[in-house]
Amino acid sequence: MTAAMMKRFENRTVIVTGAASGIGRASAIRFAQEGARVVLVDREQSALQAVLNELSGSGHEIAALDVRDEPNVTALVDRVAADHGAIHVLCNNAGIAGGDYAPVTDNDLDTWRDVVDVNLFGTMHFTRAVSRHMRDAGAGAIVNTASVAGVRSGAGGNAYSASKAAVINLTQTSACDLGQYNVRVNAVCPGLVKTGMTKPVFDYAEANDKTHKLGTRCELRRYGRPEELAAAITFLASDDASFITGQALPVDGGNTASLNMPG
Ligand code: NAD
Image (tube, rainbow, N blue to C red):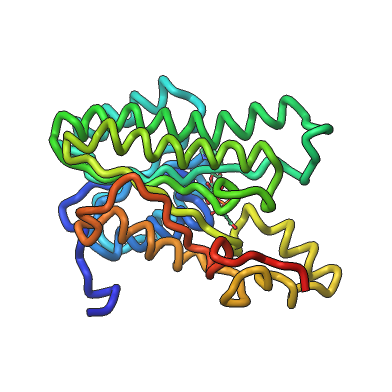
């Protein structure tokens, strides 16, 4: 069966954060292709509208808000649950990188707080609000977008890595809290993927004739596409993953499997 023919999310309501770009956009498109009603969350109305226009099917909606804004997050979640009767899937995908790499000695505290606020608190805000409805319904699946940077250092700055390690731990602890209610919680850990977030990396490589180096620290010798993450995210959100919870799945072309020895 081809992906386009699968309808794993028919009559299901799915919230995707960070849906205006990159991995979130690709995930929203894939969920819609598979029959879901998608609630697309991101910061800007116009960017969300553009993705909404690309979605197949009907019943989708957009919500322009900041994942750091807990009262607005909870109000949105409660309203969606009331309108649709249930929230079947939550994808906590919104995230920021936090600018240029800086060693721990030079950490900028405002940057650190920003990264943790968006990547960790944003994930926690949505998880807290949505999991209450999933608990009461006795079903649900949550997929968090973590990172290979949360598994070990070496990609992004230390605020980003620490925030993503915390997202992996939040995935595990939430899975333990919610398993008894038939709510599964998993994460994907992307390697390097070409998106808005990594545009500076690709721009730098292009400007310095280094594009051939991108992805060489990955066993498949290439970088990933947002659609490849969307495939893993929708798998973990679907009934195909019905006995999988508390896991952080690397989707990284083998990056974390490798020792990455020099030479
Ligand atoms: P992206 O920049 O294309 O998409 C991220 C989206 O999140 C943007 O649309 C942005 O507006 C939104 N966002 C950021 N802060 C927000 C906030 N406070 N409130 C609401 N929305 C907000 O980047 P992407 O690569 O698609 O990132 C998606 C996720 O994947 C992120 O969590 C990122 O950390 C993770 N990730 C990406 C890579 C990669 O190589 N691209 C690797 C590992 C992990």
